[in-house]
Image 1 (tube, helix red, strand yellow):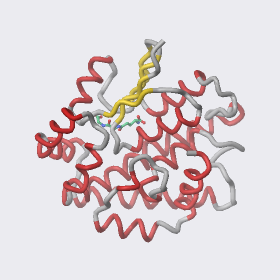
Image 2 (image 1 turned 180 degrees about the vertical axis):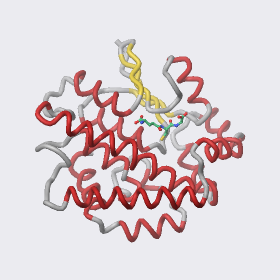
Image 3 (image 1 turned 90 degrees about the vertical axis):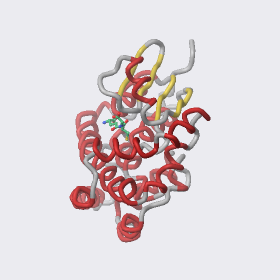
Image 4 (image 1 turned 30 degrees about the vertical axis):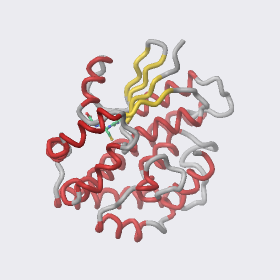
Amino acid sequence: MPKPALYVFAISHYCEKARWALDYMDIDYQINYLAPGHHRKIARKLGVKGSSLPILVAGGQVVHGSAEIISWADTAAANEKAHLIPESSAEKCLALEKRIDDILGVHIRRYYYSEALVEHPKSVRPIFTKDLPFLQKLSVGLAWRVICEAMIKGMDLGYEQGQESRRIVEEELDWLDGLLSDGRKFLCGNQFSCADIAAASLLAALATPENHPTYANLQLPPRVAEDMVNWGNRRSVNWVRECYSQYR
Ligand SMILES: N[C@@H](CCC(=O)N[C@@H](CS)C(=O)NCC(=O)O)C(=O)O
């Protein structure tokens, strides 16, 4: 049987979340980097609703979305060392994962792109083309303006929108700092779970861990870089670094 195939954007924090889960569960898979635009054709071909990545194809099954991929990995993995959805605290961990996916993940991305794509699009292109096959790399170069315009419209980017998302990110960081303030090692339960993978991967841009597959070379736009310095000492951001060093 062919290896499971994971379709990703190199830059995407949701894709990193799925990758981390598969790596953590010792699942052997093939990674396929896609260019924006081309990903729609693949999503259509695979018959998923919408076109977002990550998508995993495993033994004829198409698994769409990072949370669904974690859930698939949790049952498919031969490695019994640890489950990412612990039975004893599944409901709580899944609820935390959902909040982190739906709020932090969305707003950190909107804040970053509002600054980077609108004002400094050249800083984004190298990460978008990272590890792409030659022809897709070429097509991103040729269609770069169109891609930027589509992303700006699709995610409703702009200065005001970025500032709104920045405020939401700060509120969510306060919430995470609060959760971690009792010294707990994991966000929920007594083991590393889907909630921890969600928070650490979706916040990785703030912590820029050395062993992150993409963000080591992430060039942040000036206002975002300033925030990263200010937020860098938060309990939650230090906890992300710790998760990367221990579990990634
Ligand atoms: N909640 C979804 C979000 C995935 C998502 O938003 N992916 C973005 C990249 S960060 C994407 O593929 N956007 C392009 C599209 O939707 O066509 C998940 O966890 O998988």
